[in-house]
Length: 403
Ligand code: G1P
Image (cartoon, rainbow, N blue to C red):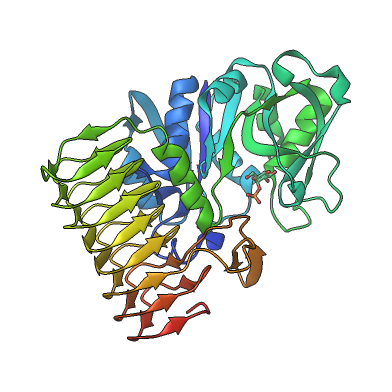
């Protein structure tokens, strides 16, 4: 099945993590986010991939090249991010006139469900959420008529509705009939975009469109969702030790130590954890939860890292605690930098996304730190703090606001 993967977006809600890389190229475990989408597509039956690129397009192109796992890849360039229908319109020049699958390149899809989407006729992936208002919400026939495997017939879709007609949302995975290629020229929506959901709406008018329920789905749009994506993908790790691990280091659960990584004396790692090529952990460090220590990253003496992503070359050198956080490339935490990841009132941690304070739905969340940011010694960082790329925090500071 020919498959279009949407990977042109900048990911403004992901800032500062997307300051120097497009959202699809953010690392999730051992590969970029979009590679997980593409891997699932290949395993589910993609025979040809058209990847739509735009923001920082070269990074995506270089990663995939002209074939990926023996599946031919072409790229379509969406110069201006005008919406998902426009992205597929750009890709359509690379498609034959048969049916096609479209996938959001910034979402994780579980494989069995994605396979069902590929194998069915016209369909859209659906997922039940508590708060559907920020998604496309599916209008379905009475749930009493549910067919096999919980599929429902979808009769329409409403983008970001104030009063959602159901809590079944559009996962951004679509199986379109070839005819839909003629319908890609849609008008602007209320939010000023050319929406693929308008194409879906039209498809629902002309075809029976199945809502294929996904068992697991994650839209990776906001910084803490990168932690959630990492939790998901590290949960699939098979343990493997290729690097240099000291005899007295303790590795428990699924831990991968890549070739070129070093785990020194006195270290305890409770998986799932991924310690990448060139990384160094310890001596006497404690790594737990779903943690990635990126390429050339360093976790030094008496440092505890829990459920966190340290991107390449990030350094937490001495006497620090980092929990439920993301540290961008080349971040440096001074000795004694401590991250708070739990509020005293036990409420969900909030974070500012595009100027708006929002609940993350997480009781535990530490900090999001852009590339190259540095803290001095003995810095305290409060829950939900965001440090921009290149930010500086002086010695002894207590940081409760974004910087
Ligand atoms: C897009 C779709 C929306 C869908 C969402 C899933 O929204 O338009 O229907 O529910 O992806 O992530 P966007 O991310 O462009 O706001």
